[in-house]
Image (tube, rainbow, N blue to C red):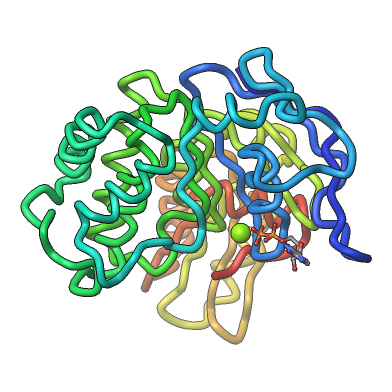
Amino acid sequence: MIQVRSLSKSFGKIEAVKDVSFNIEKGEIFGILGPNGAGKSTIVNILNTLLRADSGDVVIDGINTRDDGKKIKLIMGVVPQEISLYEELTAYENLMFWGGLYRIPKAELKENALKTLDFVDLLNRKDDRINTFSGGMKRRINIACSLLHKPRILILDEPTVGVDPQNRNHIFEVIGRLNDGGMTIIYTTHYLEEAERFCDTISIIDMGRIIARGTLKELRKISDAKDLITVKLAGSDCDTVERIKSENPSVVYDIHTNTIKVECDNIVRDIPAIINRIQNSGGVIERIHTRGTSLESIYLKLTGKELRD
Ligand code: ADP
Ligand code: MG
């Protein structure tokens, strides 16, 4: 449905996007994951024709975005990173304003405004001014604004930044429902757990380049990233550690914190064996910590950097 070919874009000396290519299938949730400044918004803004690429092409439903930006705007909804709403207007008035830009006939727009407000579960707040809304509720109105012209593709650029957990879940739920209805979704984030949670395919970008791409399973394979089990022992116990190490040489022991770190392929499968081994060697376990958020280990492995807020 969407083909992106060798996209590049610089701002002066900053190469924001370098030779980026990917395909998105119809009905997919496509995740673009990367830290701040990686180039996510630049890619997204080229897709929605807000920015022009220096080189490369974007073809959506057979239309090159360079040829017919207007048509692209009609099939695409965009939830920008920055919330763009009029604080003094009510939720409903905002929708009528933004929908008006799409030249939707008034009667149809009114109907769509009410429907989308209902869809994001804010119909009961329709006549309240935006300046009385929480950050998360504003986000939901922002999403509603992007749906008024019934797009087939929806781009959400970091829609959960600054949103409380309850609203965050609400946004996930809305995205899930849209996708169930057949909508293709492009979702950018710097939160690993979000990409991991619902993206079918993930592209990891760093400094303007795609450094890895695939399903979570494929990314695991590419990076050879391992899960990590950390066990804190009740006391310093070198004998136990020696015994465990003799069976599993990859174990790392930190004598200062009495912790054992074991890399493994599958936490669920390997954790009972490790616990047994420690206990059979006479070790007393104080605490166990696991890092199964494999995307995090994948990112670390691929870039050598941690992905932080
Ligand atoms: P992300 O969305 O992943 O945080 P951006 O696409 O916003 O990243 O930015 C990528 C790089 O391009 C950054 O170094 C940013 O400072 C730069 N950049 C983005 N937009 C502009 C602009 N309009 N003018 C100059 N530099 C920009
Ligand atoms: Mg951005």
